[in-house]
Length: 195
Ligand SMILES: [Mg+2]
Image (cartoon, rainbow, N blue to C red):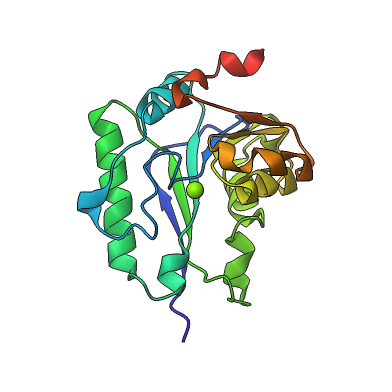
């Protein structure tokens, strides 16, 4: 039995026509503990709030795009998934940072339904956000910790991606867009993207 569902949460207004900062969640915004299912276990990654606040200040929409296959696998339920998400956003707010929207794909890897169109490396979460909010995907960027994040960015038409996990550096050449490796999240800012 499949338990999956896809969820979109709208948190703040988004100005049409702007580029967005797309963020993978687990391993980028918060430490990835594997199928995170307890709000008490959420820890933000160093620099995540600083990075997000810089984009908030520059009026870039910040949008989380996260595979949550633990839902489809039956490891946790929808309420738990949302409680974890709310905890992450509460911790960000404590540090003066917010997200504008959240896309969560709860499809399991073997889900052949249309839910899987949102599951990275497919670009569905990014392209849906692009259509809904008239986001300029050609100027948007994504920060992720897996090659599947970079592949989703490329498939959505983003010009480049940022990879915060150097375990996958050897696979960068399989991605058809430039992928920049990042040691510190706080180094990613709207002004750094101009260079
Ligand atoms: Mg991740």
